[in-house]
Length: 383
Image (cartoon, one colour):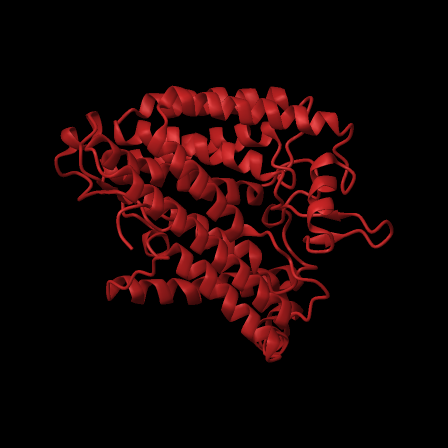
């Protein structure tokens, strides 16, 4: 299906140095493609695969793991970076079509159907995980489900609202969600209001249950998706600056968001599990800066778009790697593979952390080869 963006879909400009002045100073009516966006999306997906697939979860270097609850590590930037890029891609692909007067009803149908398909793929992945790991309960929400919901909601906002309304929605999400969390009285695990609502709605079908109390929590739950929507909206506005060549706004907005997130964190801490408003601003500000850097280096200075092959087949890489993992687990191949190829030869000389990281890097390299072959053959999987 063509026309509207999905994760793995962006507008493009290239070669990087060609018509430099025309591609960075004013918006055009037709969709363009930015190699920087593909590269940034691709490196984000590669980072997802790296941190999601260590050889041994008991031996993971601290920067490659999430903060236990409050706090922030480099890994905590990965998912919001991806959702931010989803918003950027929506701006680059949909806004030119709105400006040239394309049929809004047809575009809305495309956005909603594509969002539903992403959610459906996430549900299918969780069904496979239920089988592979012999889990006691099916988990309803997850990474792809969150991406699909954010894509659909922000896509519709991009079609029917103006920038001012989008900024108002962004502010309302931050303030409203902050008030909702504050109303719960605590942000502690399992007993915060977001977790209590998710558990009340989903019962045992959440990511984690506290064996002592029976309370549940889901880091991609319904309530914390309010924060994720704000992240995607921030990406939408950043994407509009990008297509207009307004790097100055990206840099300034990034600085303001980082500062605001740091100040806000004194009252409501940075928390990826709850996707708190301070976390939205902190990670959104960093994402603005990273986008500006990638645009400057790749689109304007002609640096190679490392990660592009992952970026143009993002969903295929993410879902395909998950299916591969589930198959390895289900058929008993994962542990022997790790022990014989990584832990056995590496641990005695370099320790278990190096062995675990080596497996994760090898996992990413396997999928780098896959997406490079797909890109060379111009095979791109869209949902």
